[in-house]
Length: 170
Image (cartoon, rainbow, N blue to C red; front, side):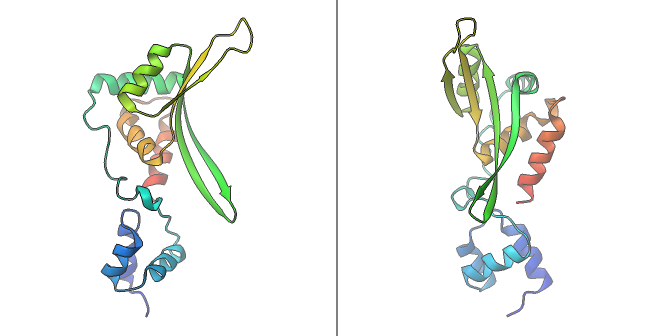
C-alpha cells in the first residue's frame, strides 16, 4: 500500500513524539511499516523511552533571575557540547551541558535548581585545587535548558540555537 503525500506529512509531524504502535493505529499499518517509512523519509526518532517526556518542560517554574544567572555561568564557565557516538552501523548524538568549578557552592546551586549529575576530581598536584563538575546529558533536559537560557546567552548562542534546531527536527 502506497503512502499519500498527506500521510507522509502527518508522519513527519507525529513521528518525533509518538511511538510506532500508536502510529500504526493512526495509519492502519504495521509498526514495522511505520519505522521503515520514517527511515526512508530520513526521520530520526527520539529514544522511545523519552518520547512521552520530551514535550514536558521540567524547568517551567524557575524565576527569571535564576535563569539569567545560570545563562551567565554557562556562557562564561560552561560547556555546551554535542558528541556523535557510533554503535555498530548506527550513529547517535548526545548533547551535554557541563560546568566545572572549584566552588562546591556553585555546583550545589546548579544541581538544586536544574538537577543533573555532580562528579568530583581530586587535585593531582599540590598547587591544583579540587574540581567539581556538574552536567546534564539527557537530550530532553539539555533541549529544555537551552530553550530556557537562549535569550540570555551571548557567546554560546549560535551553538545553542543549532542544538535546539537539531533536536526539534528529530
